[in-house]
Image 1 (cartoon, rainbow, N blue to C red):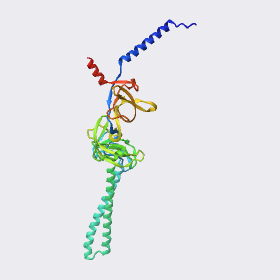
Image 2: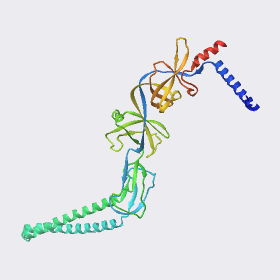
Image 3: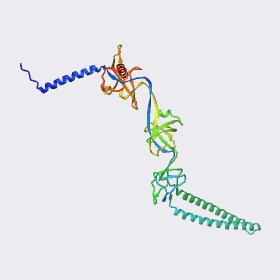
Image 4: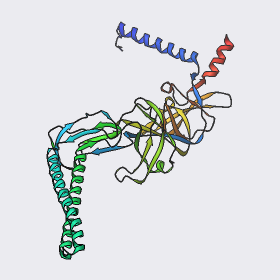
Length: 370
């Protein structure tokens, strides 16, 4: 019977593989149990959840202001971002027509005053003549009526002048409080309508932030409570000053407002985050993220170190259900007894049933050998 001849090169490769397999087997046999790092688990009845809510920084007061009367803009005295004082003039309307009308009414007032002075003198003379019978009572009553009518005309002219002074005053747009100009949409020469906002003033100094939090967390907050907020420039303690009683029907959140420290380097409109802690009652254990092993069908597991009567330690796979993850740790619901040892790292090199030794035991053995 003829056998196929094995080429020399293939024969050499086959022998090399056999030698390598034997060497690997001897290496594992000499190495013994695999050393593993473990953590001792402690079962807890609940865990603290850190919730972050995004909000917006805003001035404690924000006013959209405009002219109360229509007109043509004569001067704009501020720019966006400019700091203004309370009562400072921001813009003015053209008042040429109002000044002309005011001079007309001032002339009318002078005319009425002159007529009123003349009627007052005539009334005084008629009173003297009426006592001597030179003037009838009807003439005297007519003169008194003309005097009263002139007085009423004077009061009417005075009211007209006061109305003009008010319009002249309202032609100057002033800052309602000290703050920063924003949203300026006004140029000299433009014609503006009454009541149309042309700029915004945001109060400086005291700044606040508004957040939308869940209804459950919002109910537990109390006014004056200190809350932690953080933004791009750091973390601060803020004071709770308002909690909305109603929910936003679109987001189902409760609006809260906090007062930020004056030294906070935040600007209006900047995004900021509120940190709230929520206690959830659920039995479980904390483990490092490296202890979790991806199991079948999207489930998770851990390796628990189990020891028999002879002290031999082997790995047992335990299914777990992650509930919350924070800063490299995960809170899981697992059928692991309190005080059990769970492998905390290097799980990709392990398998269920594998014999292991704890790192502490390995260190003790090395000390004994030395």
